Length: 213
Image 1 (cartoon, one colour):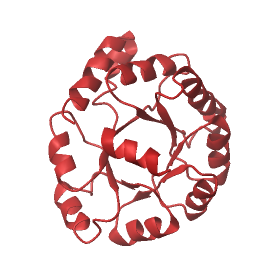
Image 2 (cartoon, helix red, strand yellow; image 1 turned 45 degrees about the horizontal axis):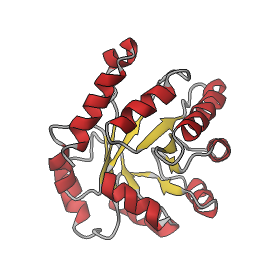
Image 3 (spheres, rainbow, N blue to C red; image 1 turned 90 degrees about the vertical axis):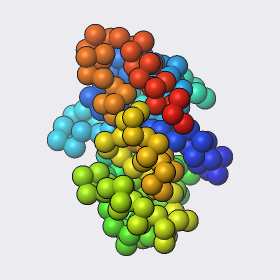
């Protein structure tokens, strides 16, 4: 567990792969890895339970294809059903937009990395006491850099990860605000590049981010 978290503290970036087609997920993962990114998240779609099995297959496919290279997490995990599906699929990280105590506890009991979403100092502290390894600052619209700086001073022992609005151009400023890492999406997974299956473009965007780190 310590080695896993240490690697994330060094790499600092996890990419949220939302809406990626099942047949493209391995290619996208490889493109991200070629750009220096070793952590990715495949989120559940809460409105469409019928897609949960496909989400699990995506996680399994990447784990198998990039074994030992890409660390794969399940995102938007807010129920125990989703946790069990993610665990069975081989997810190493369980990411939630909210603080779900049962999910955090089960994640730690299973020996996986817990990253619940929190927006207030009280939530952050509670999550950390429950055993969360990393705290996802969410929603990003209210978690400004000024807020992060203010929170990170008294809670400097808790590893915070900022999700949303992070780009290659501002990542240094975000990291200097007091977080240990960032979650990214469209800044790396360009819509046109995905549509055109331009994996070289995705690799180039990933490199633009990792070069800043």
